[in-house]
Length: 119
Image 1 (cartoon, helix red, strand yellow):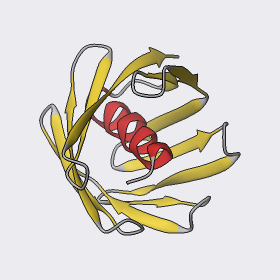
Image 2 (cartoon, one colour):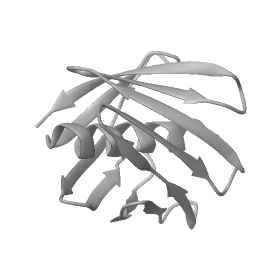
Image 3 (cartoon, one colour):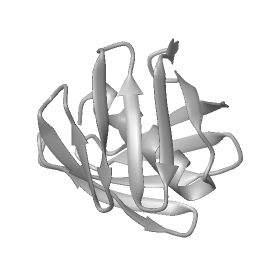
């Protein structure tokens, strides 16, 4: 799973689970702030990755990344989510807390942490 898809998954999961608008993320692995925004309404999502100038969104359980022209599935279960990235053929798990999201990339076997900036 590419770093920008992990960030997209983190932003989407946070928006769906908390109902809050994401205005940016801090990627601890990369050590930098990401210009990414996401807003969920019901089971629909609209998002924009400003670092790649790419839109993403869709209706659960499918999110389309216009930059990669690929789908990522996301299934919400309480404060967690799981899914599959079709571009990398990899599974992921997500944990959401107050202002942080952790994404487990099963292909790499590593957890990635993101701090969330709320709009």
